[in-house]
Image (tube, rainbow, N blue to C red; front, side):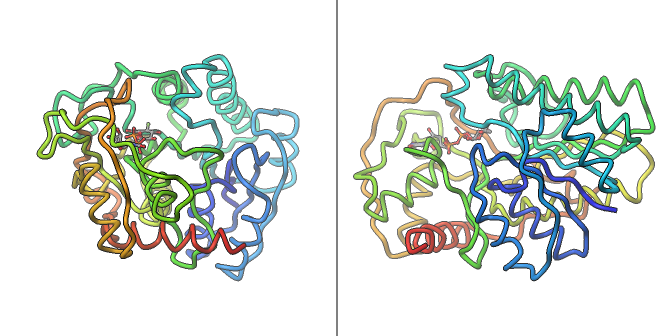
Length: 336
Ligand code: UFG
């Protein structure tokens, strides 16, 4: 029995592949390398000393998905595939709805055909929109997403609720990620955004490495302790371990649809991140204060209590680990 990982060569998928293999699971990865590289597969093998099957394909291709399901005994699917650039989603909404929603629906359709019942979905804190209450619990209102990327996450959550309502023998877990950062401690796998990064940590490491001249801090007039945006940064390895715990939950519990926040519960500002990066790595991060970025909110951090109580999961890595591992990865990847 294997776990199918569409998008398993990507940033979060590859780290989860490592944790699944390390916990003794068999996996099958499918990826079309839209935002990842084939070398990642060998790096997963190198880190774990374990092998797995791989199919280069589009996860929305039902015919090919059927082939994967008929050639392997798939007991669960963790869906990491999908586009994730907020700005691009505003410019190309149709592409986002088609790929993210179409791909997920194709998987669910083929799972149904083959009687596969367990599904773990990569959702996002973005489904909470501009949260009214912080820290955010899973009971907080969802909606009010500010871009098509976020709306695809919101819509897929609704699709999963409808699928579960129609078939209570399904076992579904929605994981709402906060802000994933960091990289595997081996320095072999990490985040590799194409072009100029949109997210804070990849931008910081590129400024520190001299690849980009300076960081623009988007706004210092928010209602936060230092005026800059506050987020819940979580180490990608902790996030990956959350998926293993979620799978264990689906293995032992009664059928259900479960929703968990995966965050640390602590919010850090943009300037906190700059300072933490400088003190963890000894590298300077030049920055300037710039206007607010459209669609950004002031503060967003999780109440991670439910995941602790029900999954036995807590984030273990601290901000220093996140900064050091991000830095280690970019140094390594430049050598490669
Ligand atoms: N920021 C800067 N300068 C930059 C980049 C970011 O100041 O160059 C600031 C932002 O304004 C924000 C914080 O850093 O205050 C974090 O920004 P990110 O772009 O790293 O992350 P977001 O919180 O905007 O978005 C992330 C993911 C989304 C996801 C969302 C969930 O990128 O995919 O978290 O809350 F939907």
